[in-house]
Amino acid sequence: MTKPVSQQRLAKAFVELAASPVAEPADLTGLLWALAEHGTELFGDCAANVLYFPDGQASAQVAGTGEELIDLARDAVDWDEGPGPEARRTGRPVPDTDLDGDRARRDWPRYARRARELGYGRAAAVPLRVGADTRGALALLGPGPTPLRPGLLELGQSLTDVVGWTLDRERRLAESRALADQLGQALTSRIVIEQAKGTLAASLSISVDEAFQLLRSHARSHRRRLTDVAQDVVDRRLKLPPRG
Amino acid sequence: MATASEASHPPTSAERKAAAARARSAHEAGRADRHERLARESASPFLRDAHLRIAAVHRSTAACHRTAAELQDAFAGRLMAWACRPGSPRPLFMTSVAKACGSGGAALTLVGTEFADLALAASDEPSRAAQELEFLLGEGPARDATSTVGPVTATGDALARRWPGYGPAVGELGIAEVAAVPLSMDGSCVGALTVYDPAPGVAGTSAFAEIADALTRSVILGPAGVADLCEGIDLRARVHQAAGMVSVQLDCPVADALELIRAHAFGEGVPAHRVAERIVEGELRLG
Image 1 (tube, each protein chain N blue to C red):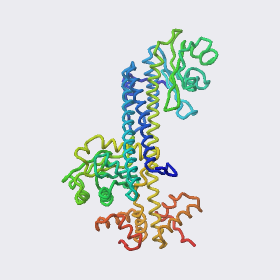
Image 2: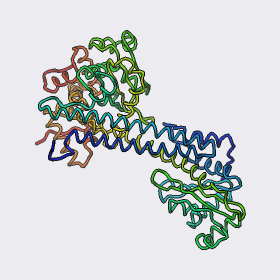
Image 3: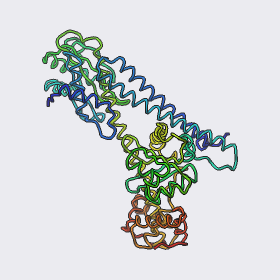
Image 4: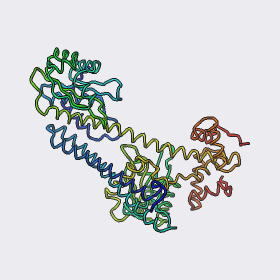
């Protein structure tokens, strides 16, 4: 599942990331890959992987530089161990941690061993915040026992925040599209009800107010939405008998 | 000033909406500040650029909510003055919108997929009449602004050149200039805001588009939804009732009936709701 990301594509992904593509949703997978790839590049000899849970507890999407890292990220999720799941759970950064130390051995027994086997000696993570929620994390893995470079976590957080912002923006875009649709539907259904009142009034020689009563009681007794009954009346699929 | 329920007291309600819009504006400005700081602290050019773009989005949203707060403040002021003058006509929100646009009159049109013209709100009679012409003729600035999702402006002779029916008719109302901007948010266009005879230069300024933006984000698609506008919003209920009746009388689809009512109204030089009223009362039969 490794995906080579050229330098150019990376630059493009990050420019697009905040370039406000108003109408179309951003390439989400591309963003996660860009985060992992760009992270790795920015973080020097550190490796990076990303966890993202689109809907709370549902299955995680992972991205990383190389099969082994992706597998490690998946295992971390399955075991609920390691800095990524921890940052995601707590919503807070996990500081640079010695994978051979007591804390890693105690809290992440399986993860720490697997990471050490892959040649990593240090691990840290920052949360991926989408709006008010923490939806994932960026995990950083350092080779050997040397502590991670100072400022690395801040850089990682900044990068992750940009991705989180973009994901949140997608969410807000979808919400405003839904609102616009609802508004159109609400107005349209009120119009159709008025038309149905007129249709019934003319076909039964009753007043529009009486027509409305008839529509309403039909909808109620058949447990249908008033709008649907009105649409059927307007389209002549439904003929209501006069009352009484 | 005390009323049984504060919520039903119009000036208080407008003030509360103003306060809510101001709070949203401050929140957005705070987010812009944060991203500008992050951009300054950023080591990577990609990141710096990304944070600056994000900050710009928040700045513009902050400005939009601030404009909405100003509209609500102005409206609250009018309502306050109205409350002190018993018997005077209740001010319309759209009047505040027109004033903010530097125009005597403004109309708002909401469009849908099924009906090109769902509803309208106007600041005064002439604006309502101009919007009515657009409804009757099926052409005009609001329709163009929504279909192109871009600003539209026309003055003098250009009116008739651009809209052969609407141009001369709107001229007869004494209107020499129209300008319209789409009400759109994140790619969804819900309608248009049109101003009639705006003060010189208004059509070209960003203020006009900003007001449209504030209306869309903060009022029409805002937390309270279109309920905010509802007192002034007109769905042309009578016209649609009449269309239903005509569709039965002539055994035709309701859309054709609507078209007939429009044509009749334009031919007679009266608003569609007048024609509709007579049809519903049984005084007029088309066909």
